[in-house]
Length: 196
Image 1 (tube, rainbow, N blue to C red):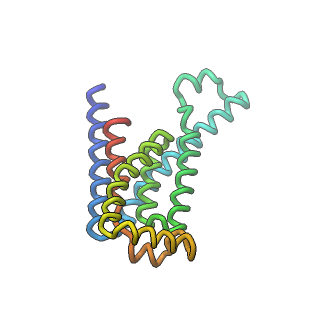
Image 2: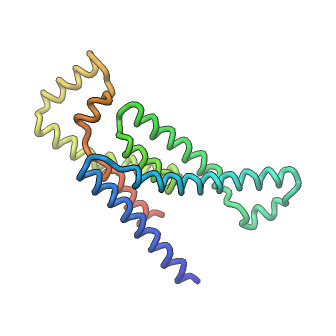
Image 3: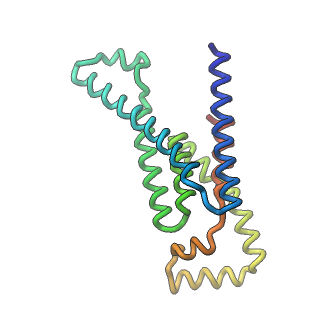
């Protein structure tokens, strides 16, 4: 039984890795992440989190009403973290939606992040993802600064701060947006294989 479980876990990790590699590759080639790559994962994982969290809430409510004993809950009938994971996913999805509305990330990027947060609904993953994106993005920012020169970057920043808007517009995102899905797919793969 343990061999089957280990095989299933490796198989699941391999499929998830291939999915993230496909997203990063398609984004790098076309600068668009199609809905076919993100929406099934969001629907499947989101539904799982909703059912799992709802089952926990229902079970605890039944126990409090005396319809089910607390012993049955503690014997493994439910996962005590299910509801907090569901709430974390909803919060993360709201943040992803906000980032998309503010034109910080594109729609495909936001949906990929939503799927990742549904897969790994923990603050540990959120911190790991933030650190990974920062570590991967700083060299890209330094390269951009080196290519354009520090004076040009400071001038653009000064114009943004004084003349606004500070955040990119939809037109700027479409014209100057870069395919950076790999910067969150790579930390997702690392977390999947080494910390999950």
